[in-house]
Image (tube, rainbow, N blue to C red):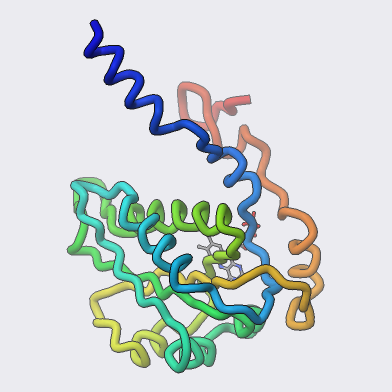
Length: 204
Ligand SMILES: Cc1cc2nc3c(=O)[nH]c(=O)nc-3n(C[C@H](O)[C@H](O)[C@H](O)COP(=O)(O)O)c2cc1C
C-alpha cells in the first residue's frame, strides 16, 4: 500500500506546476519579428522538446537542420511570395522525415509524418513557453532547399519552422496576415470535426 502511494506521489509530482492549457491558448502562428537572435540555450530546449516526443515504436523519424547565418540566408531565398515575412526570422528549423524510418502498417498507415508532426507540435508549445515565435510553414520551394542543404532525395521536407522573437515590424505582412496578427483565425464548429459514436454525427 505504501509502495503504491509512493508511486502515485511520484507520478503526480511530474505534473506539478504544468500549464499546458495556457501554452496551447497562447501559441500563435504570428509573423512580426524583432531583429534579435534566438539564443543557443533556447535552441537546445527546442531540440530537447522534439527528442522527448512520442513516436511509433520510438523510431524518432524526424531529421531537423537548424539554420542560422549563411545557411539561413540560403533557405530564405526559397520562400514563397506570401511568406516574405519569414525573411525577418533569425532561425529556421528545416524539418524532414523519411517513410522507411517509421512504422508502415496496413491501410496506408505510414507514421513518419504523424510522429514528426507530434514532435513539431510539442516544440511549438515549448517555444511559446519561452516567448519565442515558432511558426510552421508549407510555402517554400522544397526541391531547391533540399538541393541547397544536401537533403537526401528520399526525405520529405515537411515544414520550415520559422523562429524568432515577437516584434512590431509588420511591413512585410498582407492585410489578411495583419488581421491574423491581432486575432486568432477562426476555428470550425466542433461538430464539423468531432463526432459522437459514429462517423458524421456531430459531437455537439
Ligand atoms: C502545416 C502548416 C503549414 C502552414 N503554412 C503556412 C504558410 O505557408 N504561411 C503562413 O503564413 N502560415 C502557415 N501556417 C500557419 C497557419 O496559417 C496558422 O497556423 C493558422 O492560420 C492558424 O493560426 P494560429 O496558428 O495562429 O492559431 C501553416 C501551418 C501549418 C500547421
